[in-house]
Amino acid sequence: MKILALILARGGSKRIPKKNVRLLGEKPLISWSIDAVKSLPEICEIMVSTDDTEIKKIAEKFGAYVPWLRPYELATDISSSSDAALHALNWYENEHGLVDGVLLLQPTSPFRTKKMIKEGIALFLKSNLTSVIGVSPSHAHTKWTFRIKDGALSPFLNEHGLNLSSQELEQVYIVNGSFYLVTAKDLRKNKSFFIKDSIPLVINSKIESLDIDTEQDWEFAEYCLNKLD
Image (tube, rainbow, N blue to C red):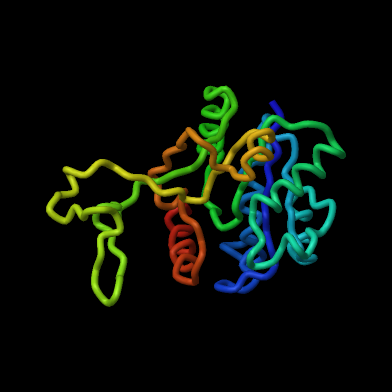
């Protein structure tokens, strides 16, 4: 089993400037994701795709493989992560041979554990190699969601469920960004880590499923660090 662990880390973050190299605790944010997959036997390489020389230098310091800087057209605000992932996958396989899967590790999910990653890889193997996506229970049910249309509330679905208690509602899940694993074949075919009948890796921990997108998220991450100590 050969899985390429891939970290996509652009330099031009807007909400949190230079977030990938910002210190969370005593180490840069990107290093948390690198350390999470070190020593796992299924991981053939920890590869970072970035357009930023500072991120490249720090990622290499923590043991990642960063053979080039990502082309500009794959590092803009509107560039898709799947295109950047395919660029890295194609280059890696041309240089180092075929892989069975691509594990996308977003650097904004710093608290994923080796145990959780092993569980995801086990699901990948058990599912006969398809796609495994990290999800968490959602506390905002879709039947309780609305859009604002012409200044008035309109149910997001055909009808709302405000008359139902939480115990009467089916549990729904959201993709949390911490774990994406798909075969190289399916990534090329679908240009996505999410495919039909993707297998869920359910992550109940709010800390493990944290996705840092705002300064408030960063503050919560620092709070979580104190809980982990």
